Image (cartoon, rainbow, N blue to C red; front, side, top):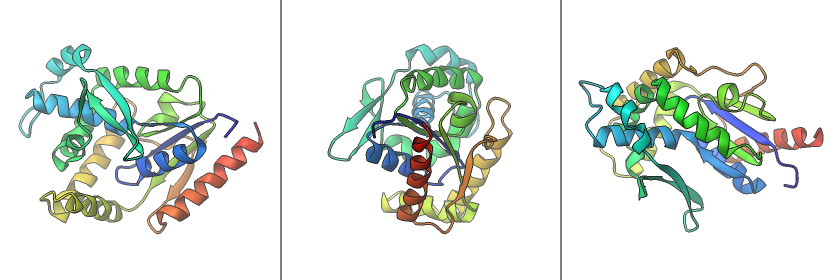
Length: 231
């Protein structure tokens, strides 16, 4: 696409934000940034270093360690998307586990973590031609985004999707565990003090509970085309 715009996709966990954003960016020839992967990588770093577990969270030590965290996206041509690297190590598989999911919202609550990552995200999108998904893209990272989308679906639907993904990866987990994790993340994401998950006033809400990927993509692509006609 000749006209470069900024597309911000926010919404609840397991609504398929990353899938849609990656699909849209590839079609438009834009840069795609999965901000959720960035928060997951920081969470994985905290877990690996013993800063967070089921019983405790040493926030201050994590904050002090932030200068030692280097995050990079490296495109994998075979897979067709960019993978997350933490301190030059590919952690794409490790950050997608239910264990990381159980802690990521707590890590994302830390203001210093959000400040560090938001700064990087803003820099990535300074020249437009970008599709970014997360929790606060349309409200904090790119409040002036050309197109803002807010994705939602029922908790049960999202938990089933996430459960199917984990089982396919031979991850030993029950549906009840996944549903509890989805509901807990929803609560934390919408109630945190720093950049809570809210729909921007000018965002377009899409409930994809009953949409397949093709229907969803077609709907969003039509929105993009409408926006570019006005630029």
